[in-house]
Each structure stands twice: as C-alpha cells, then as structure tokens.
Length: 267
Ligand code: ARG
Image (cartoon, rainbow, N blue to C red; front, side, top):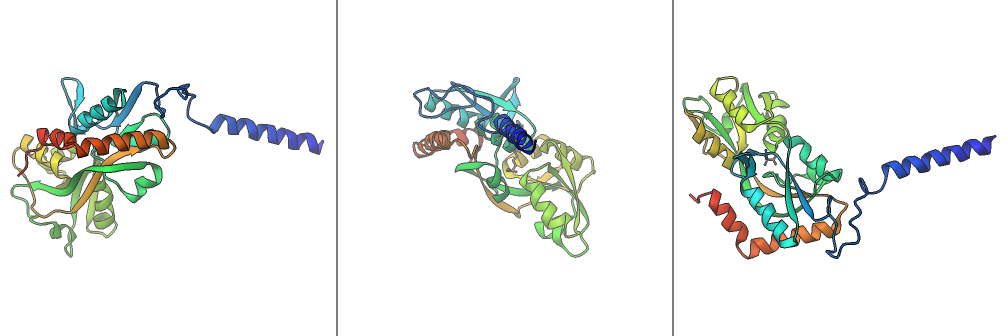
C-alpha cells in the first residue's frame, strides 16, 4: 500500500515536471542551420510599448521609431522577419522571460531588478530622467521635490524607472505621492489639467510631449542618467550571442548612430 502511494506521488511529480518544465511550447525549430532558435522559426518577435516617442510610437497604424528601426536592422542581419508586439510596458520583461517574445526594445533602462528576470545586451542609447512642470510652476529645480515639507503629486508611467525612483525617493520618504498612468502622455495631460504637480519621465519623450502640449517646460536639473538596452531571455544563450553580436556590429559600423540621428537632433 505504502509503496503504491509513493509510486503514485512520483508519477504525479514526473508528469507535473513534464508539464511545467522545458521550453515554452515546443518550437520545433531546433534543427535549423542558424545556430540559434527563436520563439517562432524565421521570425524575430519584439515586445514593446509604443507610447514613447521617438523610441516607439504608432504612426499610420504601425509601430515606428528608433527601437523599431534598430530591431529591423538586427532582424535583417540575422535573416529573420521582424514582428512587433505592442503591450503594456509592465508586461515586457515577463513576456521575454516566459518565452513569448525574443527581444524587448522599449527605451528600456538596465536595472538590477530587471536583470534578475532578463539578460540585457550592450547599451545602444542613454536616457535621462527629467522633470516636466507647467511654465508657472513653483517647482523650479529637482531639489524642490525633496525639500523639507515638500508635498507634491508626481505623475509617472507605471513601472518605469521614473516610477521606481520617485516611489523610493519621494513617496517612501513622505515628500509626496505618485500618480501612475499607463502612458507617459496621460501623465502629461494630468499635469496640464492640474491633477499632478510634475511628471518624471525620460528626456526624449519629455521633449516630444512638451512640444505637443502648450504651457509646459522641462526643468534643467537632471534626475538620473541611465542606459537603454535590449531585454532577452536568460535561457537562450545562442540567440543572445547572435542579437548582441548584431547590435555591436550595427553600433560599430555607424548604423545605430544614423538611426538615432534621424529622430533626435543633437543640441
Ligand atoms: N527608460 C524607462 C524605463 O526603462 C522608461 C521606458 C518606457 N518605455 C516605453 N516604451 N514606454 O523604465
């Protein structure tokens, strides 16, 4: 009796292991001659959140911008067809980690927490967290947000580094509260209508949003400088090498610089 129960347990364990373990959904692309496998044979699937000009935004119904062009150049180099999946920013690393997309490009900052979940390629761009305020705002420098007695409402895009930093530096220290929006542009609208006192967001989308909405400005003091890189699975070393290698080549031969210069004019 005892024996058969043990046996049953073992059988149950083995079948759950088989169900949960291994690669997500058998891909049947292990026998190609590329030396790496992708989620779907012949394709490079990019996860992004197209609310972040000039890195990714929708134009004419299509995801366009710096990251889309970089991913397209990488796909070309690897002989793959690029597919772009647009989703909430907070879902990108999980989508990569669970094997539903090959690469995450979203002006995504390399952070220690994200590095627990995904691998990052070499960095291809730099971002700076800046503060957007109304033209007549009493907030004139970054320090005002952390000043004795400060009590501001800060708008951010949910789960971005702007959210993470202000949560730690402002909310947790009692200098104010954070209003989290699913898009940066919504946080900027909230600033315009007086629901928040400032917005913390990356410098390039900040410039794009301030150009669109009248009466706003970006403070000159910078909050945090960060590195953007491509998020990839920790479990696909061959693909990681291929994509990272392609990206390095595209940096070295000036392609990435040209793509960025198309969208961002140097000051
Ligand atoms: N750089 C910031 C971060 O990694 C913001 C990125 C937001 N990107 C986007 N496509 N919405 O958290």
